[in-house]
Amino acid sequence: MAREVYDCADGCPVQSTVQFISGKWKSVILYHLLRGDATRFSTLNRAIPSVTERMLALQLAQLEADHLIVKKIGTVSDNRSLEYSLTSFGRSLTPVIEAMAAWGSAFNDHKIEASDNV
Image 1 (cartoon, rainbow, N blue to C red):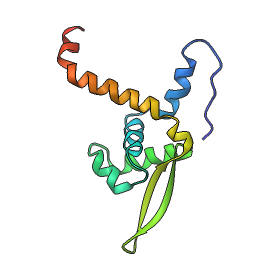
Image 2: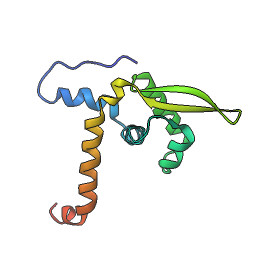
Image 3: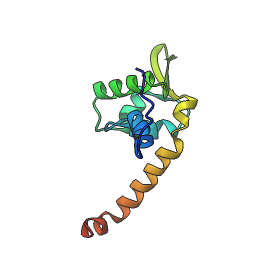
């Protein structure tokens, strides 16, 4: 799927980024893939227990179509396994995902205070 390169008013660079990581699970998947060189489907499924296998497969397919990850079919004990790893383009999102993780950790630590200030 070809993605649009935005060339318009302020905010469009954010749109360019969000189109790759939007959705409930893509950023979470990228976060887990950043933590290791390659991850099997079953490992990701266990790491993200709230996602269904169908949704995980769909999100992985979209990330692969966007060239953020690569899928490799390997063998483990004579069973075929799928392993996913980040491409260099996917790794370029490292500062974005790390910033999201840092902000999320800070929010989780202070969410009671944050809800009081709303």
